[in-house]
Length: 196
Image (cartoon, rainbow, N blue to C red; front, side, top):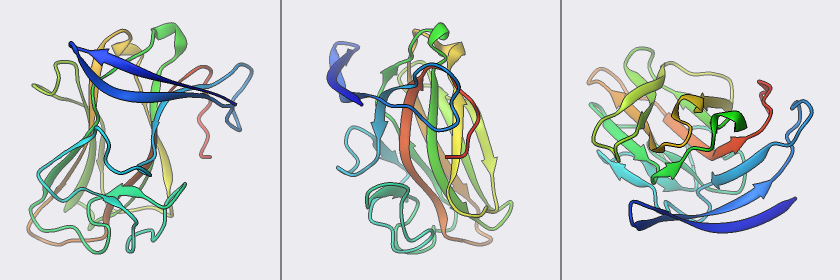
C-alpha cells in the first residue's frame, strides 16, 4: 500500500487535505484501484458541512450500532430516531473529478432504516459550488440487511470541480433509525460491482 497526502487548492482556497492511498479491492479485475481520497469520519466532520441539522458525526449507539471501519460514522441521529419533517444535507468539500479514462466514481457504505415512503435518502451533485444540485442517485426508503455499498459514477463530470451531498428528508407521519454513512471514497481504476 502507498500513501501520499496532498493539499488541493480549488477556487483560490484550500478545500481539504486528501491522503492518496493505493489499494486493491477484492473482486476487482486486472489493474490497480486507486483511492484518491477517503472520508471515514474518524477525525470528525473535517471539511464537510451540515445544513438543515439532523446529521451528526460520531460513535453510533442506535441504528446499526457500529461502523464499517473504525468507531465513527455520519448519521441522521447517532443515538435515536431522526425527527419529523427533516430536510438535512451532509455536503462534501469541493473536489476535482479525475479524467474519464480513469473511470472515476464515488463509493460509500450506507445503512438506512426508514418508514417506507416517509423517510428518503438521496445523493446529489453540484458543479457550481452548491448553487444548484442534480440528483444522481436515491429515493431509497425502507431498509435493508446491514451495511450496503453505493456507487456514483463520475465519468460525466471528468475534470470538473464538484461537491456531493447526501440529502435526507422525512415527513410528519413517522420516524425511524435513519441513514448512516461511512468510508466515502473517491476512487479510480478498473471496477467490478462488488459488495465488499
